[in-house]
Image 1 (cartoon, rainbow, N blue to C red):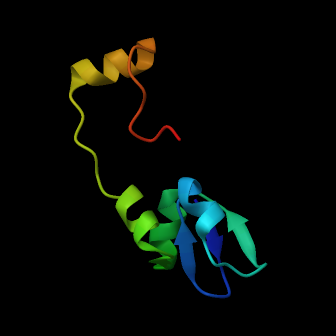
Image 2 (image 1 turned 90 degrees about the vertical axis):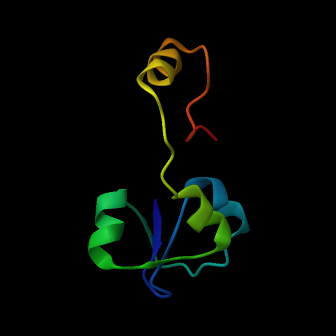
Length: 73
C-alpha cells in the first residue's frame, strides 16, 4: 500500500500509475493504513481493497501456481 500523507489517502499498487499524488509518499501495510484512517485515493483503490472470497481448494491451486492470486497484478 502507498500512503500520501499530504492528501491523507492510500493507493493500491495496481492503481499507482493513475493516481494523482503529492511527493510525501510512504509504502506500508494494510494494517497501518487502517490505523491511520486514510481514505482510498480513487475508485480503483476502493475496488481493489474489497474482500475476495476464496475457497481452500483455490488457495491450494494458487500456491501450486495453477491459478493466479486475486491480488496478482
